[in-house]
Image 1 (tube, rainbow, N blue to C red):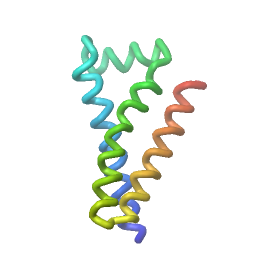
Image 2: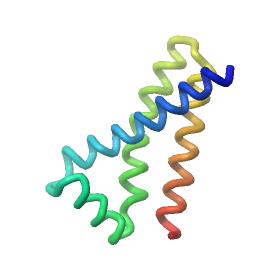
Image 3: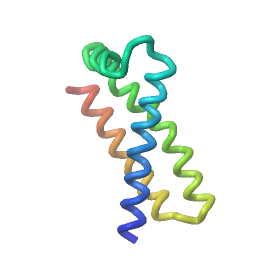
Image 4: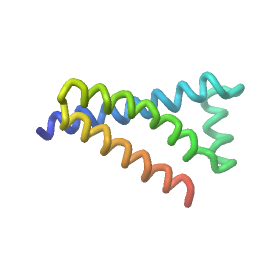
Length: 92
């Protein structure tokens, strides 16, 4: 049970990072490093994290479709961690 939850959590974090990277790659005219620096200065880092979390929906529904409920719970946990990251980024 704990192993399945951890797998879902790791998949959720990786999906969030991949979603953030894909957003920056396709919609930013700057490099990854420059975009992150500019986003931090302009207080937009939370928005990038939130847009990256959209891929967590895909992982969540794939796990639900396969009946892997604990992995789906891990993805939800990763989404909650991302939300906490957004809060920290907004109020830092």
